[in-house]
Length: 166
Image (cartoon, rainbow, N blue to C red; front, side):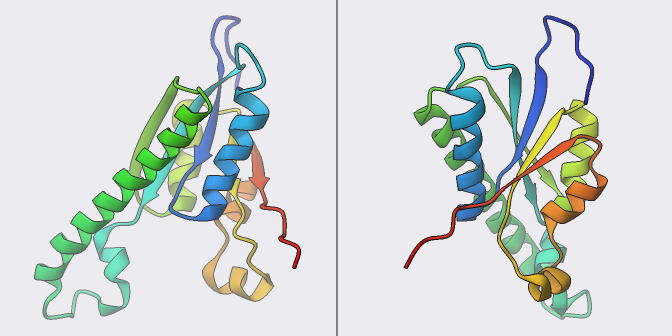
């Protein structure tokens, strides 16, 4: 856990993306750590990892003849998505009267972006939502939360959405 002076708040980073799992994790975190206390003990950082245009185009690769024309369009779309994700996250905070929030968009793989942000902000806690992948999907796609739990130099809280009853 990061050390702080008595007048400095500890940092909590919440990973945000465009999934319902991320939105739920943010709402849960706000409800349990920020809106229940008159003076929260944490400074809140909302972090979105934006994929690079080249990684989003991915399989087509540099050999793709139209890559030069497509990459700026893909990059523009990814920037718009990132702005929407951050705006939605700030709205969720605002609805719960949490206004002292730092937002950041960093390009790169979410696993590395989140672990690097923990170091940059000297975070005490990293909050990530769980997509609830099974073992096979997790093995194929990789799990950001699993990676962070093993590599981030702080406490990692993985927030799972309750299963809906049918």
